[in-house]
Length: 136
View 1 (cartoon, rainbow, N blue to C red):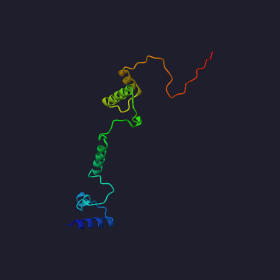
View 2 (cartoon, one colour):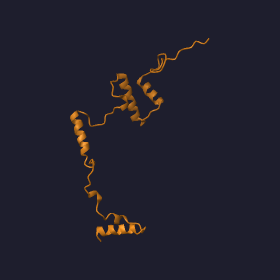
View 3 (cartoon, rainbow, N blue to C red):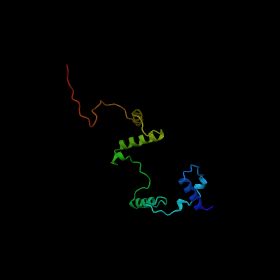
View 4 (cartoon, rainbow, N blue to C red):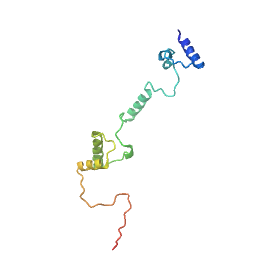
């Protein structure tokens, strides 16, 4: 039986309302759709677009690896203390498989870095200073 006659049999069965299930081997005997040359906007199967992007980055001096920079940090210049804290937090999160540590865990990392509370509290940056009222 040829491929065309099987396809015709399937089509006629569908038109007649025959609800007999069609086996997988019958469905697969038709022409392979993957072999067809269908025009597409971007060819994704060859990987050319990715290689072209990698070549562009290499020419621009950019690393091909994903950079380990948090986009919320705006890539500004950090002080030594800030960098040490960020590296310690990243190390803690990776070692403990905790992408979102609790505030208690953040405090543990700070304590492990050697930070201790030794000064009197001051107002938090960015918050309005509360006026002291003298009620006697």
